[in-house]
Length: 62
Image (tube, rainbow, N blue to C red; front, side, top):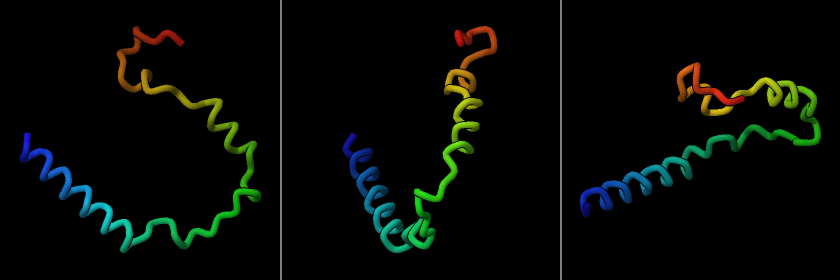
């Protein structure tokens, strides 16, 4: 159990260092006011829940 705690902490520290150095998404400069809400609504209407991927076909309730 102690090994798990130590290795998990080291992995978190390494991940935080990499994110702070690389800064993913820093140069995107996206203005939320210019995004098309209708395009998002089309994808949201056709999306499926996690059960469609995890359960067999006969188990869907929706």
